[in-house]
Length: 562
Image 1 (cartoon, helix red, strand yellow):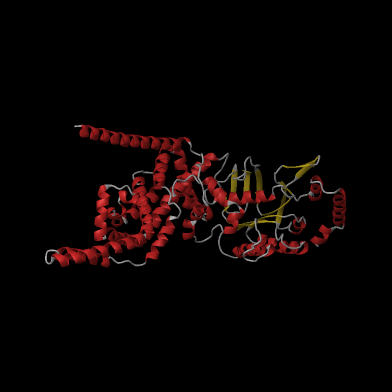
Image 2 (tube, one colour):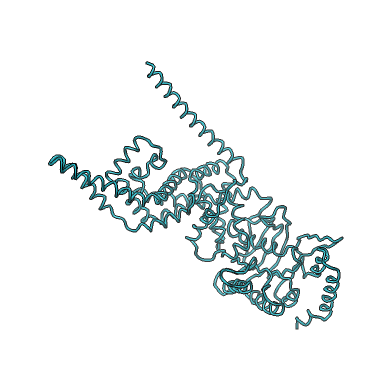
């Protein structure tokens, strides 16, 4: 009787523990859903380990075709940080697709308008948004590798046949049958078959175990699709139809998959039934046979798997863009015209806290002058980011933005290539050459941004070469925004470039900047005065100012214009 009472008490504790675990799980899910609703526009705290962040680009690398934002431009504009600021996704598919669209500007407005429909729907329908985000949180991420790494690794397995496994089953049945013919011989035969079976089983199992992770993620993708399809969302009609078609083609992949992908085996729970099934697997190689069948199915349906990842990623990326918009001080959707021009009000940089907003209206290329730290480089990056975000996430951080669809490219934050053996000047001219080459290709107008043209060489050659390079860009149906300290260029290029500048104020040995762009060329020089503010010897300051005055009096600028 005591044993029975003890058993009942223990069973009660187990039931209570299970119920508590279930209730805690439900409570955590309700809290998560509540936060999805209440924290819309609050960026989730994510830790980006270098090896994991590198994997985010792999969808883009697999689909890199046509015009893309190249590595130089991406790094010039600190686009990794822009991506992180925008990454409100919960799944690997979503964040990899978000990265992809930031690197591949749309070249047709229709594509952007459809994105806007999806973004707007989820912005205006919080119930649907929360439900879909919860589904994506169940899909989750892939760990240290991209799903495309896993898919690539499958090719390393080569062609695999089930014939050896079927032969082992025949031998095992034959060994059992031999027990009824000659027991001693049958026992020896059975022992040899079992030993070989187990050795070969564990050898092959160790080979395939790392690849089962890719199968597991494909299953999660299929489950996500299954949960999404009942949501009848008009703006996603095309996407949901694609998901239905692609998942339907994978029915054979799922059939009998429990032999390889049972929950207990994947989690290592030690369930007695799973342990029993493990012995059956070892004896008959059932999971190895199923692995080869599923491998064959995955290879046959790589296009469908890619299609599901693409559509799932697209939907979540649009939700993330809406959440990012919610976090912004102000934003607008761009207006695209056919004229190569930019008209914007209240434009600001997405990564600067308390940014200064600027207005700009120009129907041609722009040359910007001004002193160091006055805002030239930041303004170039702000306009460049505005043009890229307009054609990727259909969002510009401004009160209004009008411009032509274009191909943005930059040459700004360059440095010596120590490993490649290139000096700064060589790196610079290679960077500029790729822009000139892009001008010669067919496609939308190029919108290029150049900071301090050819700063890596002497003044005379820099001015001469810079004049010709910038002139060649402006002569075509393209736009260039260039920043320079060489005031000579504002005269030499005034027929091709609109002059703008930034100013500073120096008062009582202090300097301040408004960071507001102004029309015309810079009329002040502060480099020498800054030496004084920083405590340089008075004789250095006086002699430098005298020399600068002599050069100006010689009519240097007028000579350069002849």
